[in-house]
Image (cartoon, rainbow, N blue to C red; front, side, top):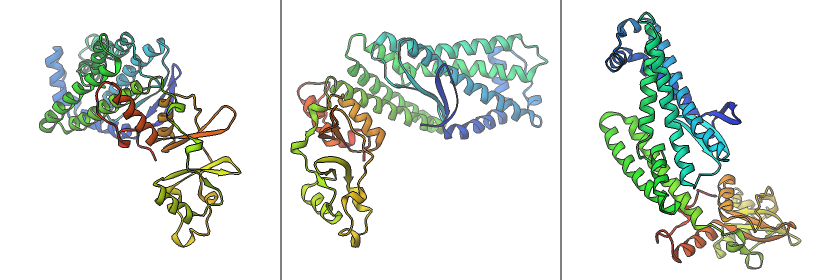
Length: 390
């Protein structure tokens, strides 16, 4: 979720995902079209006497619906700032806060592994939502009955922000409650093991939420799907990080002496023949012994069959290389592969010498070997278990 940047606060970029531009007017319409029932609910909960029928006349209901929807997502934004500002106090960097279909998400460059820090960061968001709810309720109480439109909006925001805090504290990892659960589990367990346990609870929660949503609200089914996927993804990433702890690229790369390489003068037809025989889909490209590019099966496919004898590797290779140092962490290699959408990285030392190649296959092999020596569980990883790479 890159989103559209609309500004920043406290040094944190604020973005709007395209889905937010769809969900905001939808929420405004849903609130505006149901003001009568919402007014009854607010009256029953807060002992008020808002006349919902009077608020449903003309364009007023849509104005109130829009104001309530904007206020609701404003509360979500402050909720995410609650997480982010506490994390920044601990020294963590926040990439951005993005509003999207299911609310908001703060992107951390690094996930806290200290259980006390994660606990504090996780509860900060719901506490901000509770505080917003209390302030909105105070405004609701202070407003006279003659200000029914304002009382409706403040009453709605009080109800929804408290509900948001309660819902987020349910143990649906990676929701806030799930992160609190992981923090508590990590008091007496390794962080990766605690993540796996919290993720399993989160998957069960997502399944139950999905079943509930089938009968009452299909929006909850979609939310359950994203909770399930989020729990699976973060658990996988944490296990990868734990497995590759203290492992550097030099430990797992294929050295230059053991690499199959191609020359810039190799024809595309010859390249494809080598790929078929050697079962490789990508090669470093050398010129006079120096690395000048990478060529992949996708590059070769772009050349028509009748022209493959005429085209050389230098015509189709990529010369904008993402390289990595042999002393870099294995997780850094995974992150760079994912960021650049490539399946292999040339390894270049401090002197600029090409010393090897690290590929997705190298990472998968190393992962399975390390785990087989004693780990959280014995489940092997295949290439599909790593981030989707080219």
